[in-house]
Length: 486
Image (cartoon, rainbow, N blue to C red; front, side, top):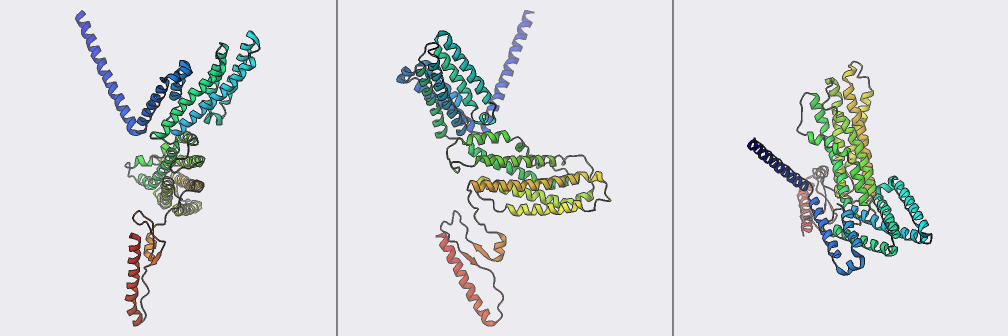
């Protein structure tokens, strides 16, 4: 029995070892996946370690250590741990909150101490306790205000903690002014280390992330809408199409993006001018665009529910609404994708109006069709699904137009660059060729050359002069190209 018990112990130990190894392998894979999804996470971890090394070196610096002492110098390290965030804006916001809260709380604590120092051994602790109670209660209540909760919640917490700590420390005979001053200095040093490392070492800008997030969300909506028309009518025709399922369901990430957008906009407001984003960039307008994008995403979710719905629909109804619905979904999708590109490269949207006009025209025609009397001889139960899809698509067109208006407002307020003119097939067909700036042509004058075919000559003299005129035009064209290339 002893041998059997020992054998079971060895087996159990071996099983536990295998499970531990599997757990460690899974953890390593998860960490690798997390780092591959966003390599900036690895960089951020290293930056926090660098900031801690800097303040630790200061902590071991003898003059600083002797002036502030152990209890206060350690606050530099704690400040780095509490303040350093992923983005520059978040770090600046928490650093500002901590510094101002420490300054205000220290000043008020000094005032409270001087106010109560002549009240005696009984009166002083009672009044100080009352003041601590009042400030903690009032400050905690202020945290429920949305504006304070959004931007200054961390500062209010630090204010409560610092005021209470300094006030209680004054009761025990410490030099209150020196304590407050040392706390402010050590917090400032720790906060400065965080800000310097965050900005100078591979900075992560919340404003840049917000800009890209809004553009990506609108692009996902465009992709979903572009494929909906064909997918819906193929499904109703009996052909299941699952190849583009991920693209069609890309809108789902937009539905839950509100919290991320608001956080990024809040952090971006703290950031200094950087890259393409100047001082006082209209970050709030990004939230307006994001709100409209989510409204559109909710309508697309309603549309997506009809892709796999087990409902009988008349083929006659499908044939009637198919063209208009397809045009609305495709043109709205194209408009949203062009709007997303305009945001991404920060240019004025130029060609979205044509897509929106086509979608609006189809929506108008479909409205007229729905109000007509063609449904009298059709079973209403077989009409409901198609009419509902058409109605939702009409709302999507309206929502797309609102998104375009909000992006135009953003582009105007943020002073996006005007889009460069392009060489369209229509202009080529008409014979007009405009000079377009490109990396290969640096010094390009704004010249328009007409190379269109002239009308056939009506006389032999005109016919003989035509080759000569054509040669002159070709010489001028070659001269124009030679000037551009040089």
